[in-house]
Amino acid sequence: MGVESETVSAQAVSLVTGPDLSSEPGLGPLTLPGFLRTVTQKYGDREVVIATSAQGEIRWTYTELWERAVEVATALRATGLGKDGRVGVLMTNRPEWIAAMFGAALAGGVAVALSTFSTRAELEFLLRESSVSVLLFERTVAGKDFAAILTELEPRIATAEPAALDSTEFPFLRRLAMIGEPTPSTAIQTWTDFLAEGHGTPRALVEATAAAVRPSDAAVLFFSSGSTSTPKGILSAHAGVTIQMWRFQRMFAFTPADNVRCWAANGFFWSGNFGQALGSTLAAGGVLVLQPTFDAAEALDLMAAQRVNFPVAWPHQWAQLEAAPNWATVDLSSMRFVDYDTPIAQHPTVSTRWYEPGHAYGCTETFTIATCFPADTPPEVHAGSSGLALPGMTIKIADALTGEIVARGARGEICVKGPTLMLGYLGVRREDTFDPDGYFHTGDGGYLDDTGRLYWEGRLTDIIKTGGANVSPLEVDAALNNHPGVKVTRTVGVAHPTLGEVVVACIVPHAGAEPAAEEIRAFLKAQLASYKVPRHVLFFDDADIALTGSAKIKSSDLRELAEARLRG
View 1 (cartoon, one colour):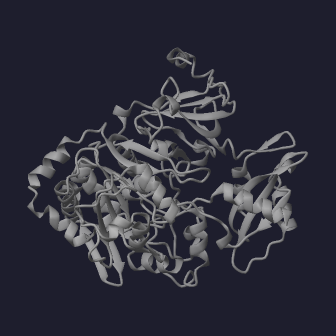
View 2 (tube, helix red, strand yellow):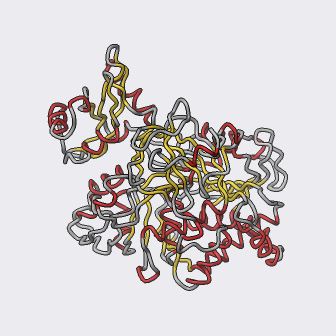
């Protein structure tokens, strides 16, 4: 398929392009050093980070964040990091994570966001795949000792000097620095000792390095969630990342006068959380209220104490907050930027009526949103869609087998290109990643309506084909979420000898709720066509549902669990 195919009338085919990027309001410098410098100059003495722990409370201003990032950058330069050197950051949501990510950028390197949910085997894979030369990590997370795990993976760590690690297991890894209880006489430096290495490095060197970073340079390496396969390393340019950070502020319509106070349930090592929560908050001069790991009761107390007005969480986490023992007594009256359809917006102390920019579509490969409607878009405008193409982005719907653009309104594979599209996957040739016209084929199914709105219908591999009909599990889950007894739901297709697949609803009920399978089916029959109503309804506990590192339900594992339950 050649470029000429794009000249076909947009009214006839499923091809839309957003406004020119140059017309997008609110964009600032398109590098991470430029972003941080700009928000520091605008909001210098305002608080940007609040973190509480058993050791006390940390509060940083924007100026202090800049200084902490420069401190990390000087240490990295002192240890020999050069342009495009990869810096792994394996930490929970804490101030040092933010300083480390920006510090890597200020030093001209590539910040590699690593999941603290990683098991031993997963961490080994991530370190090999990412080829980090410096690893900055937090020792103990949720009972896991990453220092011990790393030493198991590379025994030389136990005996080598910090500057003399010659790892054969991870041949690019040269430095490790850790927050937490020290491990004397090992290759792992304390955080203090690591930062001290940069004290003799001229500040002017870091300033010059930061100024030399270009929008087209590689900035960050995030990993896909791995909900259907092994995580892929996704390399993104400074421009792609920072466009989204500035853009989310516009989509949320945040201003400095709003005094945004953001709490996020999930790690910033997920690209959506980085762009949406961290990016929009900093762009608006707000403050990040950090909780290292999600605990529902602690989160409610933290949000009340710090007067959070912009909470960010996944649906199953909203449900956990609602089920927490202090839910009925906590004061959440500060809430303002909370979607009206979430449980927290219905809390008796909350009076806001606001809708987030939830009508959107994106993925890690586009560093979050490719289509979107801004906050508080009326229903008659978004019409339940996934939004319009954002500035600079082009969306086409292609036949999944032939790659040809389908007619407007026809279903096919969502394909995207534009300024936020990744540079590529680690270890994969560009020609194996993008089609001849430069589009990334997402593997997601959907269609464009006659106004150019995108409708996402889920992974093509997740579409359930039952008795000759196609069923979107998203549609079934959307209906199930309206049932008062349903806390978390995920619908999957399970193989059937004559129908191909049958629809199976996997549900975690609210505490104290005991919905019956037939009650659920009767509830759905009033909302869905008969062929969409699950043949089977299975109930699970929270602990049964496997989550990926970005807190998404892992569909492949859940399908296997459902199959085993039905065989059982």
